Image 1 (cartoon, one colour):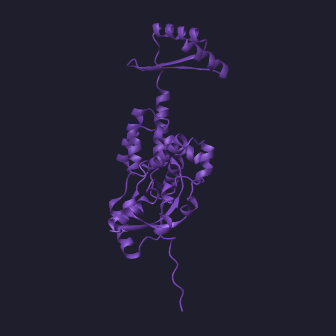
Image 2 (cartoon, one colour):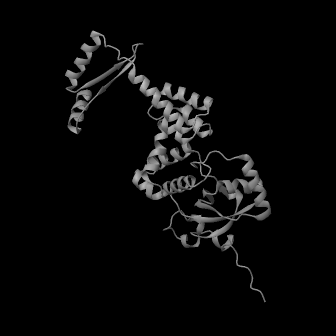
Length: 291
């Protein structure tokens, strides 16, 4: 005589009783009856995480997953947290959406207790683990983990299992102008192309981006073209500063008691930078500015 199959979870009636509806943290009464259980939840009781880092869901891939769910069912449960009498998705929104398309009324879910910060962190870390992310989306996710979860790059490195230098290289991409970031997201250029352009001014980034797309440049060819451009610019004769600009530069140096670099182009546009050798000199410069 065969044994009856064991249910996936303890059953809705056992889990969703009047006590467990009050469970909001691991210390609440009834928490043991809800934490760590896999149950089939009504799809109507589930809602997406509004801070979900993933904002784009490929419609074709979603329909393909929905068809697979119709034929094979949900292989991996979604993960949710309890919010009042409903459930918020921690991970698995794509499976949730596909299940809706497949016409399911219930979906298997693993129930966890998580506060808002833990929810965001879990969603962000899960997002990082996806294979279809573009480099800018990875960079933005790393940046959110650092800023919103208050992680250092060293702590983030341990959380996601990536070298700190890898995380730094991704985040630096966010310094690129929007047009270059968009080109990376649209797969017109690679992360390597973007990294090669990081030291360039905005207008030069645009020009190099155009060259990469028009001439189908490889990363190595892009690096060579940028190097040649820099060498050409270095050979250009320095513009002699007008006497009144030189005088004002000297006034800056006297006021801040620091070396001043002043650059100006043929159109009269330029920049000013102050040099300092240690923290004490920087403090004095900032004190002058504040005063």
